[in-house]
Length: 469
Picture (cartoon, rainbow, N blue to C red):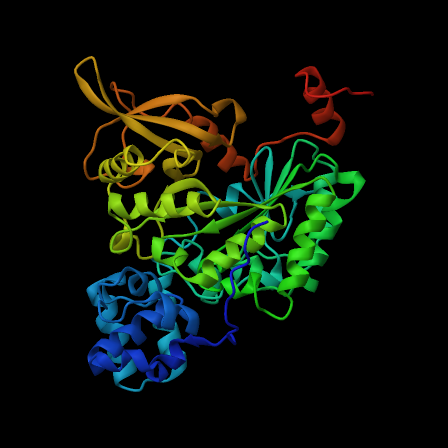
């Protein structure tokens, strides 16, 4: 039996933009530097807790410390003119309404919802969008519980930042699980549900239970796996160890396993330091002791982890703790992307260098991967074909399931940071999937997976299970 790691209790305390003057570690910065933080934090979300401040950030290295870069506002996250505008309003003591108007203008210019999230991902029933659901890939449904639309701390690069700054028409959230259950009953092609947010782990266990328990019924036996996307194991590991309802949470995880479902905690670890504290290691152990699996993913972020050795150390630490390296993502084309993005060519170099330094146990990781409009696209390598240097790309997921695992090629471009900055290779005028995406956008809906009986019939014809009319 594994030895239990003893960790001290800590009371959760959070800081927002209103509290920047009250964080003692910031006293080392000048008044102008704190004003810059306040200016950025009025445009982009800022929230950090005392565990991150006290135990993860090396303040002697700030502002260059990677965990500081990951959680505190940086002046380079805004364009210079926008930064000066916000600083001027705050310095002049302008009314709150005027500051909010300026911030909103800047926010709307930061591509708040990339990758077709609004027009393509939200399923509809009888023409009515289902709040809090996204169904981009056939086998997987994303669910956004309304009680989980915040986080213990915010990542500065977060691609879901619009949900935290009051852009209510761009928020995905569902108050109850009824719509999710009803949708899943009509879609047996779905075998995995991913709870996301925000962070579902900010919810008390009794609230999380109301969302998860309905998925364990016999009527939904086609749901094989339940995933929970969370940064809590890194930013507030006490959620799994010493919080008042941590034991109840672990009991819920065990119930999921006992019901015959696979439970995967999709943990976001951006830097090995997030796994160095005894509390963080105890959280991984506690989760694994329930029978759940911890899978680890994070984007490649300039100023934070754009170094092969960081990823090597991260994957090795994960494997040592019994967690599974899963994905290296490419920073999405939204928010302060100019500050964080890494060119795809460099991302591939970093991934490949780190990948070569680890054993097969850590090579479960895939990347660098872009969650783009047509699907999840892997930058698989570079090669020369007919004298032309190209990127070899591959669909790991696709809006059309027939695209999955298909390889295609783009012109090599050292500066491109996202799929839409690449051009098709070999003189092609557009990507072979562009016409399908246009059709989906024109009709304003996700691909039709079909009715319950139609899907079951197709699955039967494909040899997946017996079907009766």
